Length: 160
Image 1 (cartoon, rainbow, N blue to C red):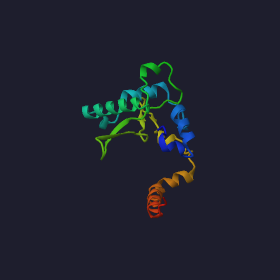
Image 2 (image 1 turned 90 degrees about the horizontal axis):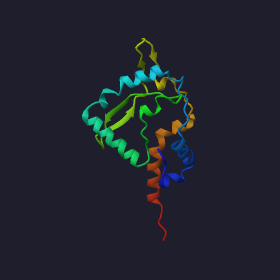
Image 3 (image 1 turned 120 degrees about the vertical axis):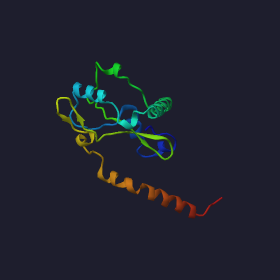
Image 4 (image 1 turned 60 degrees about the horizontal axis):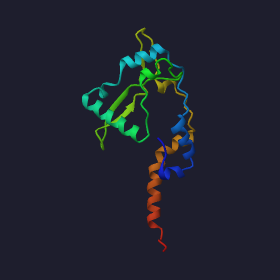
């Protein structure tokens, strides 16, 4: 997500802009082998993303995100001979959404079962939890604070 408008005034705007342009640092465990990556590609997306309707919806969403500068399409053939070392693949799923047809998600809890019988652990299982605990605890309280701030503002006297 690339901050814009009022979000650029937020204290974390510079960090978010850095993440939007250079990527967000993560610690997701051991690098995958080429075999693991190729088997994940062969497996493909979650079944929810395979219907003609889901595919058309996702193509449209990709076009919109690319046009808005929020995404870049990278084709496998352009990187398969020089795969980034920390490259991993999680299956795409499309889940029903109340304000639009679908919402795209990545199944980061997916464990890849290899042809050899081995199992590659999920991204969630191998990711190091690095966010400050206090920041994570705040997530559940943000909406209440916004509502409180709006109500407080409505009660303040207006000066001309």
